[in-house]
Length: 399
Image (cartoon, rainbow, N blue to C red):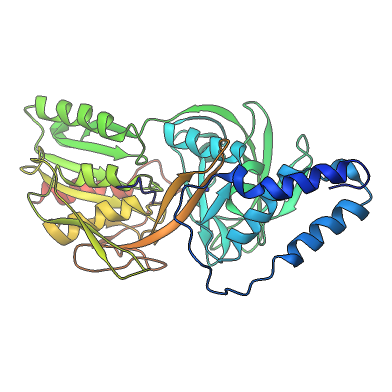
């Protein structure tokens, strides 16, 4: 079973080199996927090569005509024609960034980004990141990016996700200015953020509430390290004789690996479905079920969510509510109901391709809709108190 993600020339003598590149283009990619006949069997590729050859012969700045970059650009354009912002072709440098994100160590401002209504949006700032410290919030639309050192000064209309990531990412100590559109604010907000080296765990734990009886488990993202980090924190809870309740905090968790969400859910659900994956191509369904004996089923619990809870976070929240009737507390979630499979292509490049959509155990598709909380409460930015967390503690104390 694949790994599924719920967050990717000249004239003269050089002309002969271009011809050789054309002939070896297909072989160089070495995509190990069964070839299928395209829907339109009469596609005429002569137009592509005519444009290629015309650029090769007539474009005035020959230094800009780099065969490998032209091929990458052509592939990215082909993938973008699908109109799915989450199906992307990643050049080696871009694919490396994605892997760094999932591994939890990188340099940047510390935000997860995606799309809402085809606009670039902040899914979530990472905790204690430069972005969070600068006041960037989940749900902010990024409308402009400026970085003088990288000679970037551009709007984000029609931008591809890898291009946005590449523009915002940078070396620690450098600065980038993001112009934001925020709900409730009439004027755009320009925020200068200083990049930093970030080491981000996927799970944190603290005991809160009266008598420190409530285990506050914050899942920051679902990465390759989540399972081991989760098991360590669960062991700490089991060793605490006073602990009787658990808060699963999925606020500002943008998602990650589907399997990591299934592993976490299996610690609370005795048997049954956690998520249903539906392949659009043939309508087939694959049910991911509980895979182990849960260690935290005896504890009282609630789940914290907000507009930054997306994808794998919504899988976990939806499963716990559908299967265990556990309350969701906070604000409506992001609403990303599709699954991407990362495929390594060649030379470090990759393709993240939407292969399916997912449904909660009760058959809900959250895409563009999100999950409505059972107890709706906003966090007041003007106070030092975490009102949502306090509400969760209050609910547990009244069980």
